[in-house]
Image (cartoon, rainbow, N blue to C red):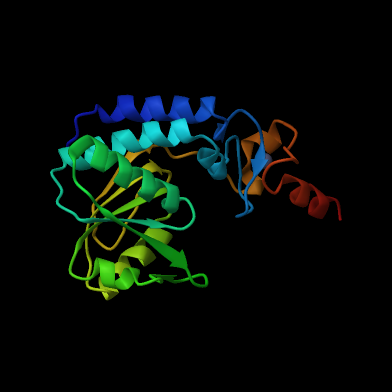
Length: 217
Ligand SMILES: [Zn+2]
């Protein structure tokens, strides 16, 4: 990746920012939906409570997109998080660089598919499309979005996202540029070092309450 930013500095800056806004909560003991345990919790929806936070992150996304010298006429975002991101991106892109982009939203249809409704399929046809997303963990969702865009003859030029949580993300060969790369350690319940230390499980966030209830049965 070639950007105007130092990758590690940018990643550290974003991590501090997300902690400051309470999006990342550290130094506790959580149980995730997968059943695994860890010391950090990510309140992804919290991002969208703070317009100034979105603005700041999207400004960086725009400069990264510009610096990669990408040519695209459409910005696409998967619902829900991708909606404010795509809109903010197109507004800032116009303000910064004087280029007007069209915005399309990919909507989830069941577990394994995204769809382009509302005539968006016609908007992306034969166009270069930039895909924006918030957090990528496995890359499954964004891969499905690429599939859908390609089914409608769109050329996905790049994915720009806020945070890459997974160590390796594959999105059908499309290049991914995250603002932040950080893998949060997770443990199987049986091997959890936090359980071994006797650190109480957080029952307010995540699946901690459910885990403890099942354990006591
Ligand atoms: Zn544990």
